[in-house]
Length: 185
Image (cartoon, rainbow, N blue to C red; front, side, top):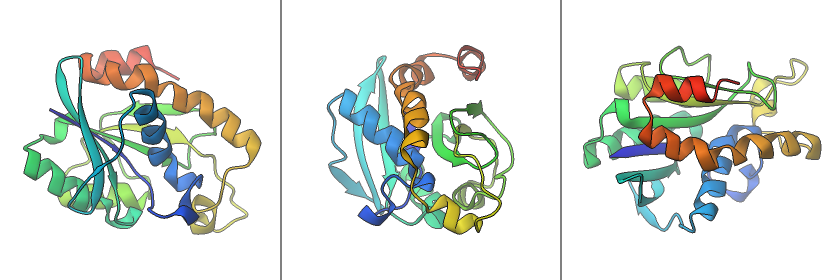
C-alpha cells in the first residue's frame, strides 16, 4: 500500500496559493481518475484506489501546513504504511517555477510542513516531489508562500501538474531511482 500526500492549507482563502501546490496536484490527478476526496479521518481528506495492482491512498491533510506531519503519521500508523511507501508533494522556494525535483531524503530546507513530518517520523528519509514556486526576497517568506500565483506562473505550473498523470502511476510501479532518472528535470 502507498500513501500519496499533497501538502497545503485548508480553506478557500488558500486556493491557488504557492503553499498549496500539493493540493493542486492531487486535485488535478483525482479529477483525471474521477475520484473525490470523500472520506475523512485523522483530520485529513482522502480517497483510496488501486493503481498498477497496488492500493493507494491519496491524502490532503486538513491541519495547517505546520501540523501536517501529525495527520500523515496517524494515517501511516492506522493503515500500516511504511515511511518508504509515502510520497509527499510540496512546494519548494529554492526551485524556480516550472522546475521540480524528486528526492528520497534531505533536509526540510526550512519548510514547516516537512519539519513537522520529520518530527513525527523521526527521519528525513522519505520520498518527495518538490515543485518550484521560486522565491521573492523582497516579500516576507510567510506572505510570499501564502500569496496567489499570477496567470503566467499558473501556466508554467499547469505543465508541471499535468506530469502527475504519468508520474504518480510510475511512482507506484518503478523503483524510486528509476523514477528519478525518468523524470530528471
